[in-house]
Image 1 (cartoon, rainbow, N blue to C red):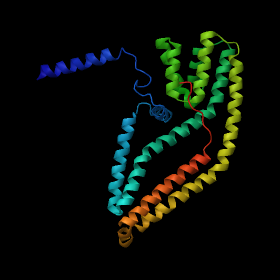
Image 2: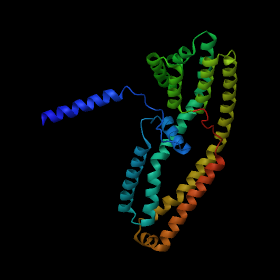
Image 3: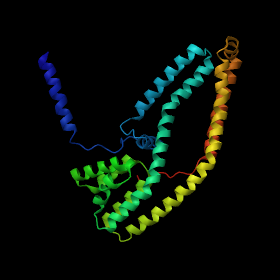
Image 4: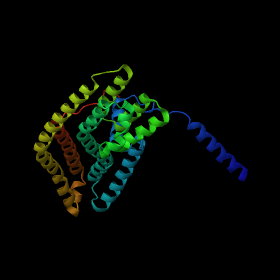
Length: 287
């Protein structure tokens, strides 16, 4: 028994050692769907790069089942339980998306400062890897870990292109894609207009941030009111379902149909509201 255990441990250690010498792909090779890639970008923007979509799906299923069991104890209405289970199952991904949006908003606010640091470093005669590496110390706080990882990666490998690719995957941001591809092009073919390009990009980002801030401030009350209007009927329905006669009425086929139709109308109205009030966002075309 001891010999078998020792053999298994030795074989596992040998396999892990052999496996550590092979480079990992930035994305699983079979992920060719743009939708799946966007979902992985959302995970990266939320700081959950190590989490897989399968883990998110399993978490959503567990939350849905727990919510269904809790609701069954207080509101024994099958259609209402189904609606709440569906909403609870979507909740983990909605939280991840919200975290990713907040991260991307913070990122868009600090990119002008990052570009100014890069431009100053290039004008001072620093090599591009050094200009990027110094952002780990002098750059904005939210992005220092990413550039510290780039600096450590470049010290180990010395491969600027591969390190840029890993940095782009880590940031998962369209602005980062443009800036890093400009730096890659400048290093590969040379370019005297890099500082001018960075200054133009800084002005564009400042104008875009100012415009988006004004529009978002005007839309905030409308969006908050719309969310309250969506949530209020369901809160009232939950309160009514605590009464036996209301639970019995909603438990009939007609009552269940009414709940399901109301859920469908709620989802459609909320999605239409988000679509009408959504600001245009950049997509990652320079992956």
